[in-house]
Image 1 (tube, helix red, strand yellow):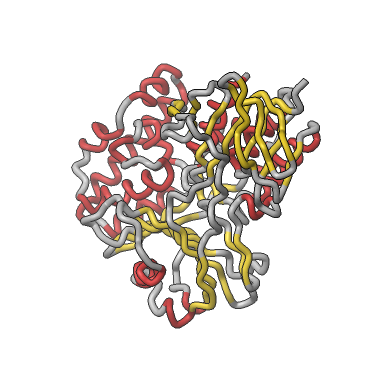
Image 2 (image 1 turned 60 degrees about the vertical axis):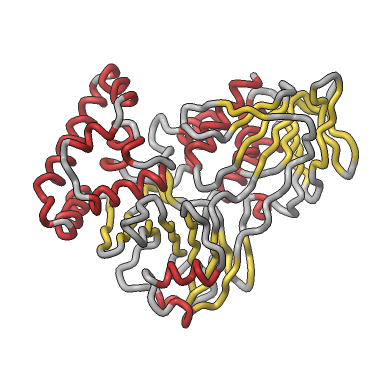
Length: 409
């Protein structure tokens, strides 16, 4: 009899979620990681009193029916859902808009920054609200809203390229698609509801997932990387580690390659511009509408993240051409945070990604998920899967985990 139903090579959030869900179904899971702790496996970096978390601090998906909401409900963890973000900012090359939970306040911000488009902005939000109310009352309307493109709806308002950029940068950050590629339902959610804010990253959720795995006789082995997939008759029968063979019915490779370049900065509090929100989506150039930087500040009283009088600043770069050097990255941020170099205490980057076991002769094909994106792959050997952690895309990540569960149960 095999030791485990599933062996996960790596212990990122996706691998933990997959193992926890399978554990609640009576499956026995083992996770093997080269990292010395769970924080390290999740990509956290601790240095000189600063603690950096690599994932975005803002996300949708905890609203009823969202991927995270479904995950927490299935695991009985609804009580750890994060709170709605009080606000965030969209910084364009020549203006900055604060998006708040109060739609009227957001409209005032937009009207101030785009005075020539006041009437179209008001009509747009009014029409979106009506669509949202219609969807809430009718399943048929909600169904067609999920299949209707947002591009046709947006064209009716003839927004300027600058205002279009305001919506586009949010769509790219939260859903990894330009605003024209969203469904109408997703556009409604983007403009009429607020995202959720993770306090301290995803560590709390990961801790609870780990607890579920261990309570159901699962195993997590730190400092023990999976070295290769063991095959027999063209199927995986487990993984090999430095400690020997681990037999398993299914193998999941939890790939943690960092697609989005990150920069971790420890800064003095006084360099933070007055009025700057903790989370900022920054577009440096209108001529490159898909290239932006996501900035996340720790709270000024968060001593767990930074020493007194200092703060962490995490910058995630989403350019079509990746920046080549830290100095180039810092220069881009300095346009938004003047005198940054003079108040820098620490500069660091993410830890190297954990390598997945050798899979010579095994090819992978993508498995589509409802959340979009190609994050789950199935091997030519039927019981081997690969999950791309894609920390910058949490909605797609959890949707891909659910697709994996459907594949193996």
